[in-house]
Image 1 (cartoon, one colour):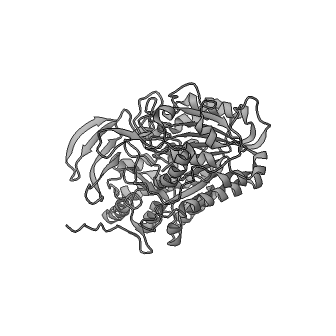
Image 2: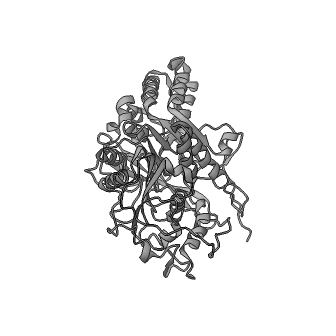
Image 3: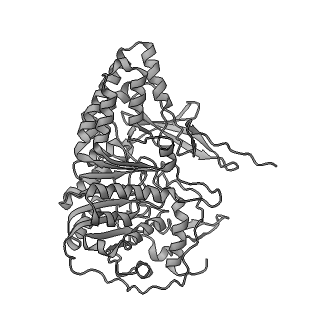
Length: 543
């Protein structure tokens, strides 16, 4: 690789890596083939901005401070650095009302390298692994500074700990306290940015238990640990603030379980049900909006601008949008319990119908459950709003006459803004909140592989996580070939959640006998049409 100016390298990558999705698989991040579709910034583009001087005295108190906590996660460095660069480029007058403080950890040295095609040696991938690998930066955004120069020489803003465990509760707490000290504000916006995997019990074990590998803010250095909902709550409480907003700029985090765990520590949540495209949030309109508008207007405008940003990316090779499945919801936490109470009514009546109805009722419920498709292939997360609508329509005599409308009204009452991609909205697909599905007192995680010749994805077995803490491994035909334990059980995970304590959704997982579909329209790139989601046809190459 020819040595180039780091900023030119970064600029090139920022045009390539937006075509990466930011979700995680069972063990490793999902990797899609990048496509270069924008002319990179010239190496010699002039700049007259000064280099950065580390802050030594607190800024004057502002109305808002964005507290941005991010990590490269093994393959997101260029994309997230682009988001951080956004924080420098709002309208100059906006910074009179909005500060931003950043802590960012680069991927590990291994994460900043990639194997060459012959797989015999590693080659530099994007950044100097020796210089940037494991490094953690911390600074308050100075809009007059040049982010290029800051990245050229990171020594003034790099923390001494070369491999800080950013998944540790103390790390997040310490940064929040530092940001509050040096960039004080009346209200705070906490942003966590990295890979995400939604809610899954085996990844949300109590903090005194060992954990596995999905979660949120996955540290590919340190202890290969990740942040959980419990860690976020403990970190924020220990920092002594109540954020106005918590934004999880990561995939699949708009789950009802996460909403409920975080509802008591923030007034608003910003979350995505589908995977988040590489470009991430559009922070320029967020800063400008916070400076000019009330909070709900600012967050709504930010959500619309972010989805518009994703919609406008075009793959030059196919001339198609690479992100047809994308969304953001802004949640008003004060109204969540009203929805939860209605969901409890739905859960109770669903269980009653399943247990007391005749065989035809059970078959109708099973048919709806079997047809439900997950938000991503490997994750047992399904659209709860759509499920309730279809179940009530299938066996209406077993539900309160107004329950469907009550659920819709309660949902609208806590949603400030829900924005989905143009393709989804064009055909009227309303993407709701996801929820953990399961049956026979377990939930299922499916494994997927890719055909080396056709590139087609195919189901490659599955694992059931039983309520008692055992794991069973199966072939596609249902043949069990191994078993293990997942270090937890439903009693210490799902049943402790605020959502389950209110609704007892785990009781439905226990008595339901029907598995749901493993096939995700977004994960398998189904075409969005007026008639429904259409599986793509894989054309075989002629010999």
